[in-house]
Image (cartoon, rainbow, N blue to C red; front, side):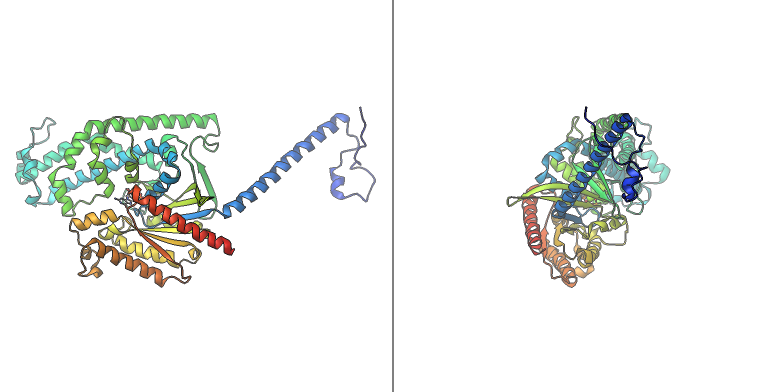
Length: 517
Ligand SMILES: Nc1nc2c(ncn2[C@@H]2O[C@H](COP(=O)(O)OP(=O)(O)OP(=O)(O)O)[C@@H](O)[C@H]2O)c(=O)[nH]1
Ligand SMILES: [Mg+2]
C-alpha cells in the first residue's frame, strides 16, 4: 500500500490559497473511505465534463459542415406541385424511402376518392333541387331506372310529388340510390381526414382542406422513412424522426400506445379497402353518368385533377391487395402544413454535398411559416401552375390563381433576405394546360388582358412566361439570373433530366459563392 499526501484542507491556515480551491478542499477530518468516494465522484464529474466538451466540439463541427450544406426552398401557392416535386427528388436520391412509405399512401388515395364521390353526389342533388335544364338529364338515366328495392320513391312518384319532369325525377332517384349504396364510403371520408390530419383543423386555409404535418406517413403506418424537421416561426427547431426514434417511444407505455394506434390504423385501412372493393361498381356508375360530364362541361361541378386520375383508375385502386404505384403516389393529394425538411446526400461531379429540401405549405394561412427559412437559403424553386388560369384560391375565391402566383413571385423576388438565393421558376402543370386548351377553355374568359391572342399552348405559355419574367426584371436589384423551366412534375422521365439540370446549376452557383467567401 502506498500513501499519498493529502491536499491542503479547507480548514488549513494557509491564507494565500485561491479561495475556490479553498472551498473545494476536502475537510481535514476526511476518512480513507470518504476520500475514495470523493475521488470516484470527481472522476465521474470529469468524465461527464469531458463528454460534454466532446459534444460541443462535435456540434461545432456539424455546424461548420452544415454551413456548407445546400438549402433548397420549394415555394409557391397551394396545389402548385411542391410536394410532388419533392417526391421526384426522393425518387432520384432516396428511392427506398418512397418504397417504405408506399403503403401509407393508401389512406390519402382512398380519401382522394371518397371526397370527390361526395362532391359529385352533392352537385347532382343540387341540380335536382332547383335546376330545370332538361337537356342536362340524359335519357339513359331515365331508361335505366330499376324498381326500387330500397323503398325509394319511383320516378313517376317523385315527378308527381315535386312537379319535376320525369327525367329529373329519374335522375334524383338514381342519385338517391347511389348515395345509399355509397354511404359506407362517404362515412369513411371524415374518418380518413381525421386520421391524416391527426385531428388538427386548420382554419382560414380553404374549404374543408385536410392538412398533414411532416412525418404523417409514420403516424399512419409506423414506418421509418427518413428525417423530417420543422422550424417554428420563432426560429426554434423541432425535429422529428420517423419510425422508432427515441423521441417517439421513450417508454414501453408509449410503445404500446404506438402499437395500438398502428393496429387501429391497419384496421381502418383494411375496412375502407373492403368498402371500396364492394362499392367500386357504384363509384364507376356514378363517375360515368352522362350528367356528371355535362355538369363538368358547364363548369357547374369543378373537380380537381387528382379526382379524375383516381376515379379513372377506380377498378385498379379498388382491387383487394392494392399497393399504390409510384404514379399513384405522384398524383395523390394532401396539403402540407408548415414546413417539411427532407435531407438527401447528393454526389455532384465527384463531390458529396448534403441537400436540405424544404417543402412548404402554400395556402395563404401557411405562408408565415416560410420566413425562418429565408436567411440561409441557397436556392429557391418557385412553382407557378399555369393550368390554373381558370381557377380561384380556395382561401380567397375572388383571387385568380395565376394572379396570386404573380403577386407571390413578386414578393419572393423582392425579399431582401432571399436576394442571394439562386432563383429557379417552374411554370408547372403544362400537361393540364394542354388538356384545358384542347377542351376549348378560353384563357381570355378568365384573364381579360390575354385579349384576342391565340388560345393555343405556345402562345399561352409565352404570355405567362413574359409576365413572370417582367416581375423578375422589375424586382431584381442584384442582377440575379432567373432559370425558367416548363414542367409537368408528375412526368417522372422528363423531371429526371430537369432535376439534374437544376441541381447542376444550383451547384455551380454554390461553388462560385463558396470560392468568393
Ligand atoms: N397533372 C398534373 N398534376 C400535378 C402536377 N403538379 C402537381 N400535380 C398534382 O396537383 C396536386 C397538388 O400537388 P402538391 O404537390 O400536393 O401541391 P403543393 O404545392 O405541395 O400544395 P400545398 O402542400 O397545399 O402547398 C397533386 O394531386 C399532384 O399530383 C402536374 O404538373 N401535372
Ligand atoms: Mg405540399
